[in-house]
Image (tube, rainbow, N blue to C red; front, side, top):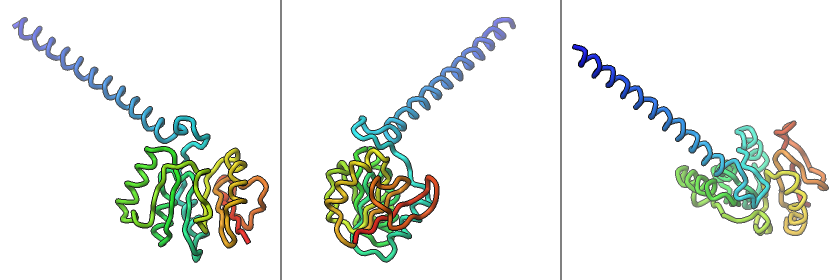
Length: 195
């Protein structure tokens, strides 16, 4: 009788160790997954770019689409992140190019465009936004921080053609006066129409 109790206690202790081990493995896996996701999506890709990934909210995407309504030409999204704006513009019939350095975000964007049937209209390039030829676009969307906008403003002045529209989400260009604004606070979108 005592042997069966000792054997049952040993079995219970073994099962408890197994559950504890699974819990530790699960927590360790969650920590590793969190690190990988943050490294891939949140931290700037290898510190080559000071632009962190910040997802555009639904209201911001809707506002950008409203500003593109009735506009001719192609759309460029500089620092396209997860491709929300590129795919949204493509659903409105625009030929849209997203420029992004982070290969994880680029892969995700391409996958989403393919799954939504937008691959012919929404294209993504692993290219620095300063290497994009902006003369090809009538509509340029930027979600950039002030440091980048300061540098980008010179490129825009040289390459943006007459009749084009530049849409800056959250931050305005340092020396250009916006034609109009939409929203308020951190949701403000600054619009610049080149005459």
